[in-house]
Length: 198
Image (tube, rainbow, N blue to C red; front, top):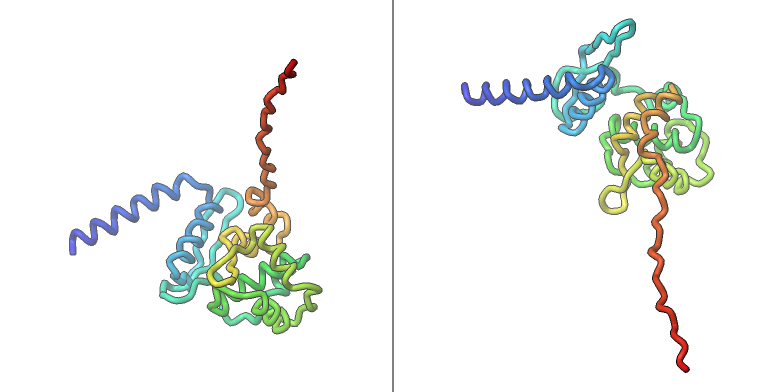
């Protein structure tokens, strides 16, 4: 029992020392990501971290297994969720719908049809082409491939949605992953000079 307690203390010490190196906002995002990764719900209390004149708040629930939402209210309808996030583009809307599927409908892996169905449930305008909207979200780094042809929201995509409706902050949160890859240069083959035969 004592050995297990020492192990917990060592892990806690390691976590705290690692988090101290980050900014307050990054600490909150890291804690959220860890909880999501471990499928732990942190709901019920508000974690407030003071960072000078402003403070950051993370709404969390009492620890329990199963849910991975950081919102106090998991019963919010898709219509209200989309209204609160105020997406401005199809990619924004796909991101919000993917987030809702993952955190509110316990559907971390989904197909384009699931996005379209939830879009209808949320009383949103029909996508002109849902497949294109989903593919654009993949290109933007919001969604990534999952198993069996499914998609899932990426960690960057989750962070993006969490920042909405603040478009500037949301875009800044994924700026690093959206940098265009440099095109590969094909090696130039050296041609052997043809010697004239006389």
